[in-house]
Amino acid sequence: MASSDKMNNETISPDKIDISREENSSEIILPQIFRTIEADLLGMLYHVLGNIEDARDALQDTFIRCWKHRDSLYEIQNIRAWIFKIAYNIARDVKKSAWQKRRQALLDDENGILSHEPKADDAMIRSEELKQFQKAIQSLDNEEKEVFLLRQNGELTFEQIAQTLNIPLGTAKTRMRRAVMKLHGILEE
Image (cartoon, rainbow, N blue to C red; front, top):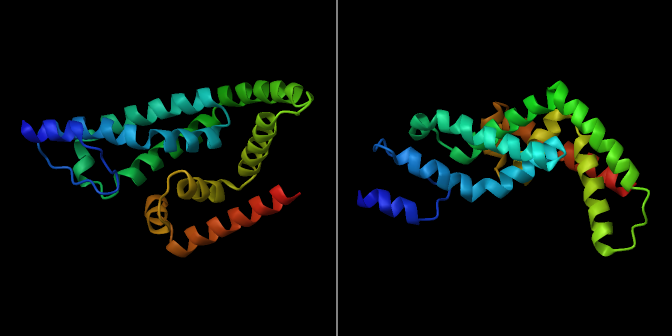
């Protein structure tokens, strides 16, 4: 019982977790891990999906899917990478759905109307720059975007990305390099 109390009060680093097969340990640790990486996950999901409502829904779906597999957490070598992979797959599924396409079309129309207003304020300028960056990320090939977001938002190493995506290490690095070069080219324009 004392070890459970200790787990509840500690900050969890999802990269260095040794989950025991102790009863309920995964039920205590999984929510703590999510609290630790929630902002990074939400940021990645927002960049993939393009709007905060869908990103929050996908974040919730990610937690639910991870929760269903909580009993196998002790078998997972890198829990952070595992969670980001699940989140990315959920985001990809949401993006493919017809509902998402209709919703995105409405948001694009709304953003087009707003973009005709003057941008005098610094906050508006930063907002516009963020939109340009998000648009640039959306223009990446799916494979490049996947590696870029796992690296930047997920803060995964190239080795972790390669393992998560089941690709060679060199391929992960090449996709990241192509993504950065494309983004640099787009944002320079």
